[in-house]
Image (cartoon, rainbow, N blue to C red; front, side, top):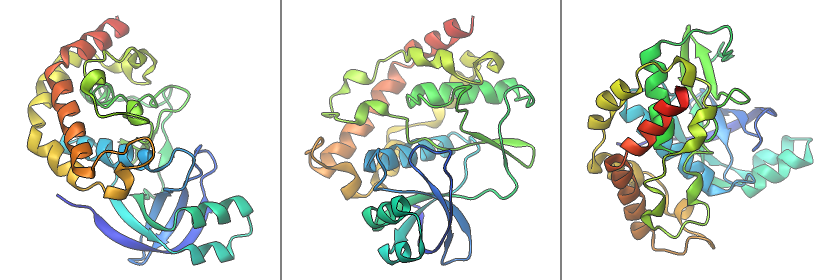
Length: 257
């Protein structure tokens, strides 16, 4: 299990609807990607959440664009007239993360779009599992591409890991914020989603996903632990969350009722 690596060849355009000012870039493979900057306000922990939650979604079989590592040359800032973008590129020099750009995709409209109940239930289960606070009516973080919904933008997941000491104290959270989920009303079989999804995740899956996270993204002033210890703490968190999942499953079922 690994991510492809590309080099940013050209900064195309900013996506100003995102709080961290992501951008469409062209890679050296001629593909287009939505770049998430390591130097944005949320810092590298947002990239950790983006990568880890995204790859958990992929392991569950949920629709998510390909994630890639992006090497960013600060020289790209020289052609940008916006000083804010110039500084963001300079602050993000080196390794960043991006999602495959889905050409022709449109933002999900919760009024106009009908999502299958089984898929809605699985997305609700997944977001509760990874503590994703950002799939609301205000900000669905869903795209419609080829008439199907695609999950994007998981930088706000695992919100507890900002300043986290690695303890398992958050693993049993029922995640009451699930009541704000944009697909909750359509999630008509959350218990069935639990039965389908939980067996797809195991310790080796979490370990393989955490092994993809660069050391530099894991440690910092608020998380001084050794990278290997920190990876192990994430794996243990996910294993305990899986074991205690009935708490967030019941919370989602009750919130929908």
